[in-house]
Amino acid sequence: MKNYIVLIIIGVIAIGLLFTSCDPSGPDPSETVVEITSDITSPTTWTADKVYIIKKVDFYVENVLTIEAGAVVKFPQNYQFLTLSGSGKILAQGTSEKPIVFTSYFDDSNGGDSNEDGGTTIPAAGDWGNIDLNGTNGSEFHYCKFFYGGFGTELSTLNLSAGSLATINHCTFAYNRGGISNNFYVGALNADGANTETTISNNTFYNNILPLSIKAEINIDNSNIFTRAENTTQYNGIFVSGAIYNSTSWLEDEVAFVLTSSTTQISIGKNLTLGENVVIKFVQDAELTVLSGEPFLINHDGTGVYFTSFKDDDHKGDTNGDGLASSPNIADWKGVFLDEYSEKFVGYAEWDNILYNDPNAVVK
Image 1 (tube, rainbow, N blue to C red):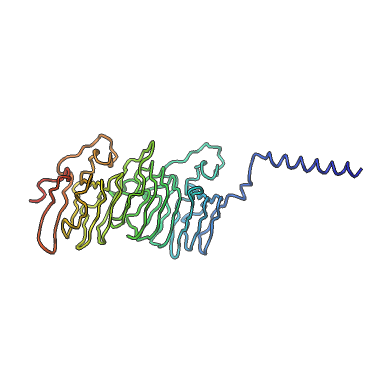
Image 2: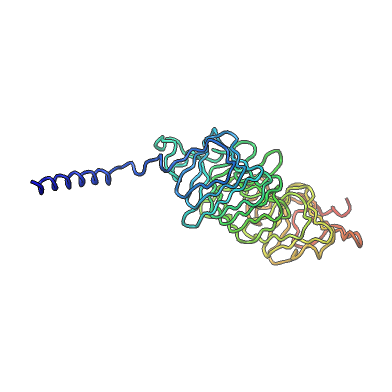
């Protein structure tokens, strides 16, 4: 009799285990999905392998937010922005195997079908707004992926505004907007207002409208990637604004640097170092002024270095994003002005690698 009872108990346990192992629903969503409904005001950690859904309008991070590798952060269309303020800082430390993903609520490929519509909706550029560092210091983004951002007129997905200091390393920016707003060129990664010590390295940009905009003083090495198979980026370049008040280096040779200010000035005693095969393009009527003269534009005559029009598709491709609709012409831009401020007036450079500038600029 006892053996019979034992067999019944074993059978019940086995049946229970069978139904558990065949449960198609997987983990209880309540254990993996976290809705964020209030600001971050004390040190907080978002843990690995969870999906965080932003459910607060004007969501602020006012203290340290640590995000562990493998976490996914999603933004519904009604809750599109994350802004740092005060002591706010994001430490997002992903890995190559387990990146951290910031993406659209409609993105089922990362974090599953969060809006539970069975794939009826699909993600698109501009589904959500941006993460704005808003003048804060010390945020770090390592092995992060930024998808489908850039809603509204702000256009950026990660915005280093108001002198923000941050490190962006081994991150991917894809399917975001960026673009032109009120004659300003805004990247999916927008660092045109960033602190000059900001580090942007080893990142990959593809299928954005405009990938990267920077302040002129930010050093750019040759580690970022801007092309890959089926890349549909429209304005594929590094768009630069402002002046250079500290010695700076631009080494990227895959895409062109585009000077978007009417005058980009290199201050007295400061230099700009160009890498081999670097191309600098100029928007209409723009110029580069080197106040201390030719020696302070280092490697201006290097192998493959050119200064040319924004419309010049022969050097680093169709940077102005209009296909064959425009072609370069003489006087598209002014030139490279060599001042030698402390010694003597020199005028515009006439190097062989300067193309499509105004040949009469010296006498104007």
